[in-house]
Amino acid sequence: MPLPTEAHSDADIRRAAELLARANSVAVLTGAGVSAESGVPTFRASDGLWEGHRIEDVASPMGFRRDPKLVWNFYNARRANVGKVRPNPGHHALVELEKRWGKRFTLITQNVDGLHRTAGSQRVLEVHGSLYRTRCTGCAKIEDRGLEPLRELPHCPHCSAMLRPDIVWFHETLPEDIWQEAVEEVADCDVLLVVGTSAVVYPAAGLIPLAKHRSRWDDTRPGASVVEINLARTDASDLVDVGLYGKSGEILPKIVALLPGS
Ligand code: APR
Image (cartoon, rainbow, N blue to C red):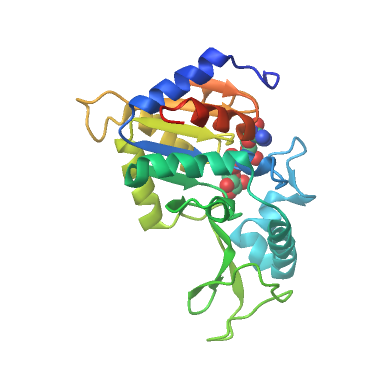
């Protein structure tokens, strides 16, 4: 049963800040909700559609084989939308956290909108790829095309094969090196912040129990503390130590403001 917004107390926010203040290393997992206040639509609308499209039509290899023009229309529209939006206070608060923890801070995002980097986050593991990049279906070359407008059906400037967005679609595996780094950082962190994700898409959602139990890594060390920030409870909520239910663009800056030295 979804909770109403603002279902958290000042004491919960203080508790989250205290856990962070004691942490030697911090990992963050973000999802579409962190960008919602910037005006980027989230995915799981109640009608099961993404901006009017069935998910498998625009975000699967089969959908791309069937109708690459439809898929590119969808992604070109998303690229154009990202060009119009700006990072929100939630993104900026995560930049502040990285400044404090430096190399002991890892931001793992399922988002492909690039807003964490635009805000100034340095070390971002984009486990589901990026709207900025294209990948050639022929020579496999990956290129950062920024947000320049692409053709309706773009082709590779090197080998002329069709390009696709460099995005992880349903039924595809995650980029192995990036995913491995995410797993190692989460298995080793003291606090995991889980922000704006419905925690239903695997393997990314599996990072949450990994932080809690980390049994494969080191069973002499207690699991990390997990703090969830979301508009409403999710599939992961039963696992978390602190659940803060409200807007991430409001809650994250409040946590940062409570950290020592703020
Ligand atoms: N603040 C905090 N949380 C929010 C906010 C907000 N302002 N707005 C929405 N949310 C929460 C919603 O309650 C929901 O739990 O963000 C979550 C968004 O969930 P999804 O739309 O399912 O997005 P995400 O979890 O990122 O999806 C994971 O699924 O479709 C694939 O590859 C795609 O990366 C995506 C993955």
